[in-house]
Amino acid sequence: MAKQALSAELAALLATRRDGYGMPRDFYHNDALYPAEVAQIWNRGWLFAGFAVEIPKPGDYLTLTVDSTPVLVMRDDHHEVRAFHNVCRHRGTVLCRKDSGHARAVVCPYHAWTYSRQGDLIACHGMQEDVDKSALGLKPLHAEVCTGLIYISLAETPPAFAALRERFAAAARPQGFERARIAKVVDYDVESNWKLVWENNRECFHCTPCHPQYVKANFDIYEEEFASAAIKQKMAAAVARTQSKWAAQGIEITLQHGGLATFPDPERNLWFAADRTVMVEGFASESMNGERVSTLMGDYADSDVGVLRMRSMPNFWVHGSCDHAVAARLLPAGPRTTKVRGYWLVHEDAVEGRDYDLERMLPFWALTNEQDWEICKWQQKGVDSIGYEPGPLSTRKEYNVDAFIRWYLQQMRGDGVAAPQLRIA
Ligand code: FES
Ligand SMILES: [Fe+2]
Image (cartoon, rainbow, N blue to C red; front, side, top):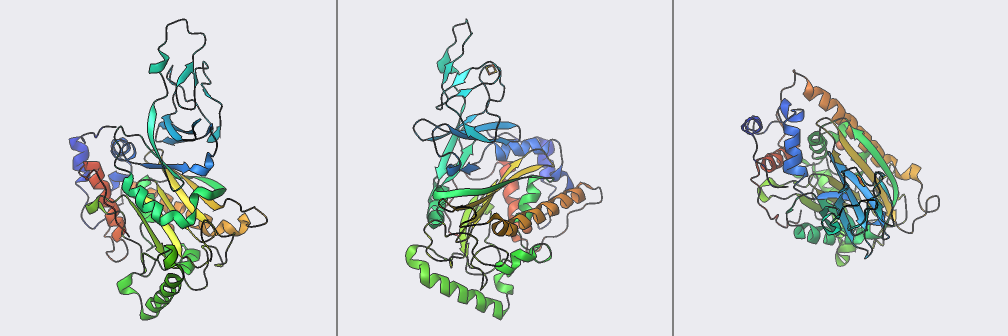
């Protein structure tokens, strides 16, 4: 999608955001702003679509819908992952209607036009006309696979992908996403604007009151300059313990202080990041009691690997423990609805009942997710009110909410630089 000029009205609306404050009320439900966000952000960037292990064989596919644009992601006859508009070239009906499946060929349910796994139109039986099949293949979309993650872009010319590929490949190598098994998928309809979901994700100010299980495992609530000497000492001890074991294997604690890594970074147009943090003493995994809940993933040879965290704007994050990983894929579905898919991944050889039990694995992140979606729902109701007025953001606790808003404004105004820089968080 080509960059579109914002209307004067929307440009004026964006200008109403006061530095250091949350976004004004209209940002969360204005009827004209939401489609502009879809055009400027969702249709232009790279979107996480799913995991390559979901479609291991030729003919396997998954689908997703970005606002009102259905997308088909399919493994072709040559094992390449391809993405297409999931729309028939005859009269436009949606082709593959399940979340995932397997197809020898893509046959339209309406009049049976048939497409190969490469997207070529191979049959349109019953048409008397001289149809130029070569001009009527499925419309291709950009697709990339990086360390087991599938990204797609609806843009004609998407931003450069190379920097994300380099950073994610290095950071995620020991986690082994390309050798993972999806243990569980949960779909959530979050009753909230997608920006509220990110604002919530980008601060841990709310973690103490809202996520009692999360704060036991992680140091996110302790910003470096404000942490007590005792907390700093605990973090330093955990860093020393983990680093000394794993430096040689490339498992590095890249965020050695508490708090959250700065992300996104609009000044550098940084839309992806990866870092690794230590866990609180006694926690080997992001589980309710800190114990491992499955066999080790990827190349990990020991539990003491902290937490791998990766994220990309506008729709992906993942936390990887030594034994499982939990990811989220966001898709906008209107100004007040965000569809979130939660994924729980384990080693490909892990067997349910023998190596892991969902009852032990799910609660930590299922609770965290549900707590967050409840927060988002009630925040949407609040910001919809005529009584809502943005309040000040904490520079200590909400620096990333501010960064997200500035990144958002930059994207909407189209003044970001084209090529993101590589940055080690
Ligand atoms: S709409 Fe697909 S074959 Fe007619
Ligand atoms: Fe949260």
